[in-house]
Length: 389
Ligand code: COS
Image 1 (cartoon, helix red, strand yellow):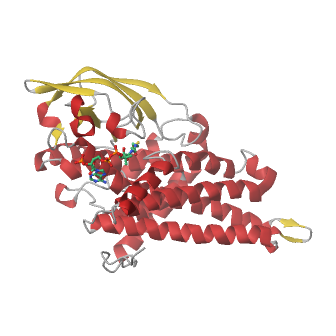
Image 2: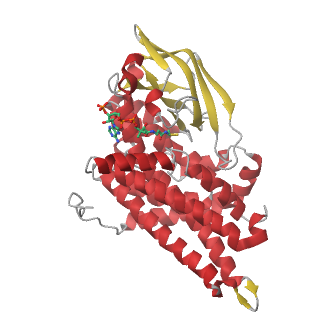
Image 3: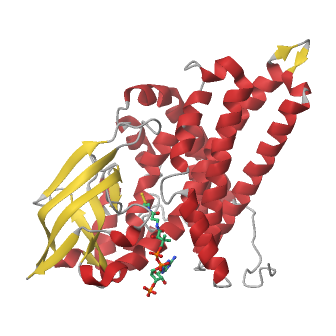
């Protein structure tokens, strides 16, 4: 592997504003999210009060640019904030950060009018937007989308079904990927913004999940859903590139979520290891335990460095497909490992619902799956290195 000639110096110092943001996000996670996290995990209720408070803090609408009156978070700001939110609760993290995913196509391909129209809606009230790419038969193979969009005068008629639409039951609007030219495969994919009240749009069944229960994932059905042609983002056929560029950006945010969850599990395990006395000494005194924690601490720091690198590259306008995929896979694999080890180190208590370890364990699994499985991340990394990037 050659040295990273293309990478100019990476400065990892957080600015005073970012340190303040980090402290504010941590306090929010500790005082607003954590106290109600178990309740929402048990009931699966939508965390409306947390969403409202995330909006009051500027975390929900973080990606709305300053020139439109929003907080205008950079990608670095986003990963710093989302690590803390996921430390508080992975499900709430998924709910709050979904706006970043849903609005990325507007940033990437929206006209100034489209950006103004849709992004400013997130400033008016605690609203969420939802990203609709996956379909029952098009998950990892995103180019195989079968939803169609047929132009009829000033509207497109959308037909088909989307699945795993995060926040979909509560969303104010959706960024949706549909084929305008099915014969062209991935090159026939286009991106649209659909308002919630679009005629022909029906919100379907919600998924009953193992973890991330404070987040909502639904089916969306389109039956001749009428979308004004003004809601097409970019050109017809540009949709696959928009989806890939979106995921390049947002996988760093998922990686930050992985770091936050890994840290929460590690802290729980470390605290237990230092205080649980067996055979006359804290169990941390056993290298079988302390080496596990040493490895986790190393992997968490490495995950954060990969995450910050990928986010920093987005902020520099650099292609980060490889770095973003590396960060996502490594950080969320680390979250899974940390959660597994937390259960093991806590022993019987770790397997009880009285401990958060079992929640971390259920939450971590989804992070290895969503926004591209970690097998897909390795596919992206392999394609990038094959091409010498
Ligand atoms: N940025 C810009 N363009 C990109 C790109 C990127 N990061 N990645 C691919 N493209 C372009 C390619 O250059 C190619 O363009 P041309 O048609 O002009 O040649 C086109 O997109 C197709 O690329 P590729 O051949 O690599 O696509 P594949 O279908 O082989 O696979 C993967 C692409 C597997 C990487 C993609 O389908 C993927 O990311 N799948 C996972 C989807 C996912 O994460 N789903 C979760 C949804 S979020 S809940």
